[in-house]
Image 1 (cartoon, rainbow, N blue to C red):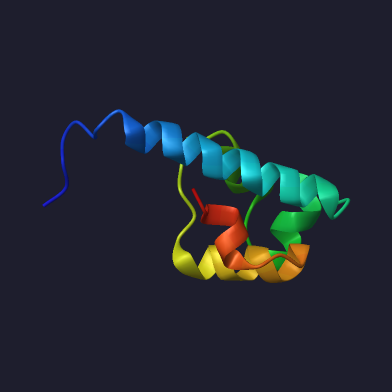
Image 2 (image 1 turned 45 degrees about the vertical axis):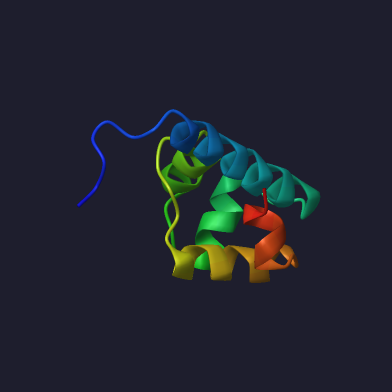
Length: 78
């Protein structure tokens, strides 16, 4: 059963991961649109991940890590 409301650290951690996604995308010289096309997601979804509004699922993270050439752990490591 999910916690409601979530502990304060969860949204903060979500934003940290989003910032890593954004940094990895920029390092790969990709726009949100280009990244979205490569992993089969809308650019608005990429935006929501980068700003911590939504969280990518594991499949999305695996695809994203592959496209930007980064180990998955580097995207989510604390």
